[in-house]
Amino acid sequence: MESRPMSLDSAKRLLAANGFEPRAAERIIATAGLHEGRLKDIAAFDAPARVKERVSKYLAIYPPAVVVHAIKSGANLGNNRQMSEIVKSHGKNYLVDHSRLPPFKRIVPEPCSAWSEKLKDALKSAVSVPAKGQPFPGRLALKCSGELASETEEGYRKGGFSLVLYPSKEEERRLEKEGARLDYNYRHEPGSLGFARFYVNGDRLIVSSVQSDLYRPEWHDSPKTRNAIRRRYKLWGNCLLASLAQMAKNAGLKEVVMVTAEHQGEKFSMDPQRMFQTYSELPQSEGFSLFEAKAPTAILGKERAKHVFWKKAL
Image (tube, rainbow, N blue to C red):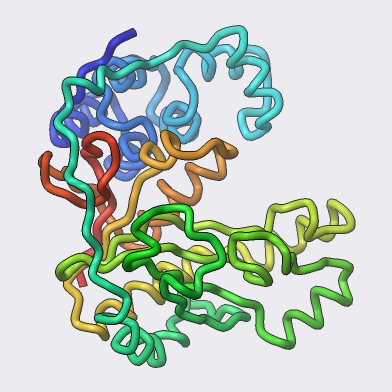
């Protein structure tokens, strides 16, 4: 099914007119994109308002026909395996004719040398920034291009940064005692709880990726250990985004921009529910809101235009 792109305002009005709360609508758009056909299908989902709110996450991730079948069959919508099986039988593809969308110019990030010292100084007073009012048991470090473990994008070799969240020494000892192991060999950021990749462009700090290795099997001896770690460090992403925003503000930048779940879903294959949590729920919980970038304005230079991003003014 071919689908034309909608404007952000039109998408919000469509979902609001069909009973979706504004915050749920933003999360849906950040995940489903501005694809007219898909958003119309979601808007047509027939259920009481309380049900729409409860399943809005799954409507953003899966075609509505899949969600309806899952509800009727009593499946657990939060179970990726069950949902994958239903998708195979009741899925529906949503396609966009990308050739009609004008491409962005490739981003030219500011060189690391222009911002490295300024950001490191700005981070010193941002390290203690709490996530949702709770201190986080970790420490932050800033890395620039040459220090990154993985240079998967051309921009990183020119001007990319990572803000890396490590467990404190006390936490490392606690993890070892509990039977968990930090992964020091993986190419993301060895030994970290999570990290955010970003660029500086003009007066913007642009977050292109937020990731964690907390879910990797190498971390855990048992499901009990895995679940305990997830609960204890569940605010790792909040800590990173809150600290990034404070660091950017201290360095004199004007706003933080972050990619959406829809954007990441086109680049990487990952657990769709975790992608929703990281790239739709997380930025919204830290005060980000959606904005529409008018092509061909360059924010992230990829093959084609990306219309919607998260943004937080500083």
